[in-house]
Length: 88
Length: 363
Image (tube, rainbow over all chains, first blue to last red; front, top):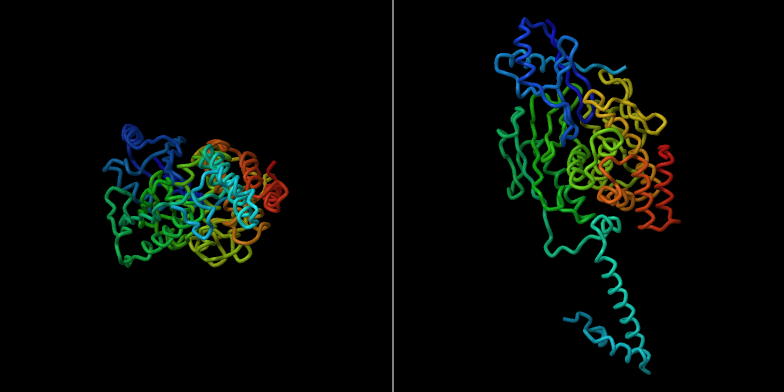
């Protein structure tokens, strides 16, 4: 299945995306989403960036700090491959 | 003890004595006595007035309280060592250290942190973001190739940039002033980070960021470039934002396209109040109040911080009249009111503020 990592926000708000194919089961995806999911809220952070995971036509705001060890390498690669989505 | 030793009647003398002296046949003595009576009356009425004046009103009047002891900035710089954990960052410099560190980014944030602190203290008597002397903590080398800077509610965090599109985010004093001003806003009117209030939050940061740069460079409104982040966005022809002409900071950028900021209300960007929508376009629509400020400051002339900056600082600290969900129209009203209090209803400054908001087409 395809998963997409999206980064938004920032002082100059830009959207960045990268994707990859993974062979994780539905149970593993649920585990991943449940452990990394965060509130989609600006809080007191100003100019901060946010990450989202796109999977199965759904978007989940996530924290990369909370990625379980077994998925870390995949997300490190996704993060390092993020490309700016040119507006327009 | 009386300090007016040169004048025999301007010491600690009961009022009834002044009454007598005012009627003295000696013209010199009566003149001094009348003057003293007048001055004492003014002091008493001023004291009465200021007794019930809020901090915001004092700020609007440009009154800096007399400091018994001159304060100095408290700064700390931490190195994140390209990780994202702030708890493992190492303290590499504090204000009591005599030598500056070798690290260029550390030097940048120390210098800009000092300039920012002095801007607020020297001009408005404000001691740090909370006005209680909080330590300005700045974290550099955050993450790998991180192309952003942000205020996390307590401290500033800066990335090194990807070095392809973005350089280090410590490279512009206006960016550092911008982030620190988010702290000031949080401790004052604490504007929401959504919709128009969020755009005002961003605009205050841009406005004070640009004035901090202009003061450091000793640039008046005509000398200033009114560009935010011209070093951060790599390429000589690019900057992150233009306050003079929002929407022109970058054109045909190979990765970013065109600067999307509107300058006028007609072009207000309607975006969803989500992370994807920049919380209703807070970094887009800030172009509108930015432009209003630019026009107002330019029309007043001189140094932006002397008049326009004083008016906008009065607004930034006016908790009574600017609520957390304030709109552009609310800020328009407040800045006109403060300009009227400071300079008079018929003044050039009030006209300049009105002209600024008219130029931005804010009703």
